[in-house]
Image (cartoon, rainbow, N blue to C red; front, side, top):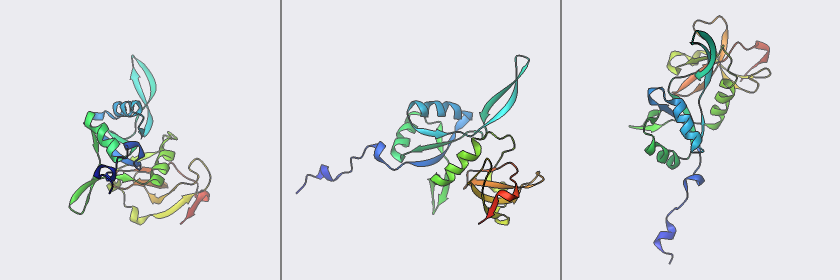
Length: 189
């Protein structure tokens, strides 16, 4: 008979399946969290945008986080818990499942679309809370050609904008409305 200890899973955090976790860095410390995650060799992503700031009487164009306090971390659950134990300002975004709050895990394909869309630093991107849009009125589409080639989303009218836009959504976390997309590039799914 094998010893009891040999039946216990001794897998290291590195061998756990990795998932994208939506997280909140309290008090606008998303860039500090990114720096610490990079130092710990944990893959992460903060959507950035350009803004013009006045510094010492000069206008300077700088990159800032597009969504306050939002950071995505690609890691195993235990690995992330260990990191969080040393940096408690990093909190999970959660959603109610049954009668328990569970961390929001973003599917890899949704995260890939989100990263592709937001890494363009296009000034016409709009970051919208998912509850501010009625996506049920939209049409599911795929873009063929242009900057957003291969992306899938919902084609809807966004309030305050003249044309309809393709919206990429990460469920219960954030939506990003892409810049105007030529209708010739859009395939209805």
